[in-house]
Image (cartoon, rainbow, N blue to C red):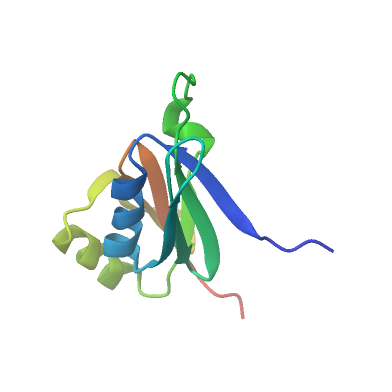
Length: 124
């Protein structure tokens, strides 16, 4: 059986991206180091390790650096959306009902990263 060890993202602005996760979503900054590519910042978000590393020079980067989006679950959707607005988050998709019992919104982090905020009704 597998467990998730970490997510590894390339970013042209690793410091700014890592700080956005800290400021907007309460991630914990664990370390930073220099790799062959440049700066790598390690954060913990929602219990998971995320390596935010400088994209290699000359690489052709796909939109959002190969990660379509990161989804964060919440039970306090309205409060969290208000908090993100106060922090200056740029909403790519305004809060909406995606389907019955599910509300979502998407915000942008540096270098075109997308974070989905999702609230799902609990099944009884």
